[in-house]
Length: 353
Length: 269
Image (cartoon, rainbow over all chains, first blue to last red; front, side):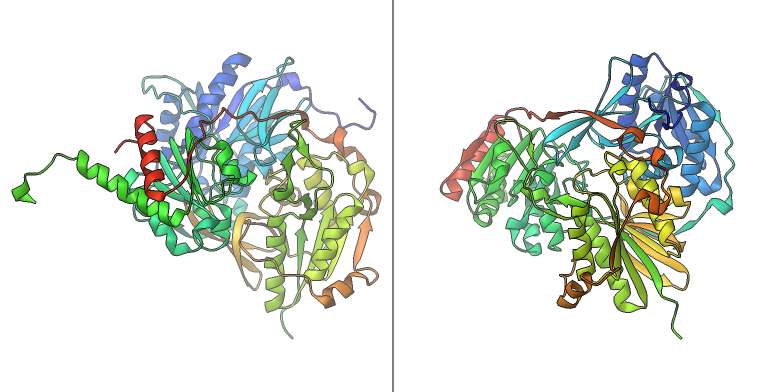
């Protein structure tokens, strides 16, 4: 240690694992539930309690839900201005609680709000924050090994925060499996006060327009995702993918090139700067398979690629594929699925047809 | 007299061109040497958004970056596109900085420039992809932040921005000065103009500052003052995939694919 080095508070004072909880419409967000499961595993290995942090307004019910997923304790901070996520008040609440209780580890969902919060907070607290982790472990000294994809998922970087506390990380959605909910599990719900008031509100939410779509299914939640890329050549051709998705009970998504071309809205983008999906089946149609795209879908259980370029990188990670013209293949695929569905259905008497 | 000129600072990073990155099949590591660089694409989207504001009203756009002098390449491009001037914070002691010292050093540089109204950053970089520096700058400067935005409206001293959240679009209103982080792909960055390229050569348009010039505490930057370290990097070995690929006539290939999917229980009808 050099002389000029910043003196960091003795890290042995810091104990316990925290997860930042996000709710929406009175239910916990899936990323928070997934995080509780992973937090539980780390807390058990550290022999430490697992605490959920829940700033909000009227969130007692959410706190109880969260305990059912495996928390020992929830710290609730109630205030009307915390009803929706706001950067400054939430960062203030988290910084105050962290300084008060000194947790060893603080985990956030790598949601938009989780990254917005973590980014501000780590600068204020001057401690380490690893983004978008997909795996956690402990090193031989008990430091949290925060493992995250780098370069579009071609490699995994192990991030350590050895001297600073708390060790903070955000975890990618849909990577950790949700734990079982036990409604009979008991845990403590603690209400704490943090000095936040109207004067901390430096931004106002004027309008919120929820994403809606006929068919309704979001790609992150669907078991089958039908995704289109630059090979679709035009936005109107996504109707063809929607038809296939509807037949299979799936959702439509898109690559960045398709989104950049204005064919699909950004909120359907899979990949490094879009969402991560891990469906049962991912259909990559007219998608070449750039590393940034693979980062968002390579953990899908099965991958089906349709592309006219036999050398496309997508075939390297495909379980199934067809090399050919998607404008012939997709309609044919739809037709044959319909045909098989029809023959599978109980045949109706001829007279009734 | 029109409104006073806005001072918009755009933070950019120079990154290797992502599509050029490839894994060396022999060493299983990323080949970085000789890979061409570019302005981090979301930062280019942010710069374009700033220039669009300047197209509409009186504004000064200043591009800043932190890194080695090869980053001049990106600052030159930024000025070529229409930024008024550029500052490169460049100093050996900054090497190895993670997002904590980076946010600190950039916020000190922004303070040194002074009188800023708006700070724009890309939502994240394509090489490190943390998205932590923009909010970190806002935290250091203790000013409002709105992240993941794709549209800006300015009225007097207030800023409205359209933010993309997971489940919908939000319109936020805040006051200046503020930090806004800009969605990847929300604008089409303009090409440098001839006039812009000529301006690059003019004295004082692109300047280099050291930590001492800015007043940055050397004990708060660099590798040894970064809370995080990259302990090691593993190459990802994905589980092998079956790669059952069918060719030929569409009707025939589809029938084979459908048979395989149904037999293997991948889909059910």
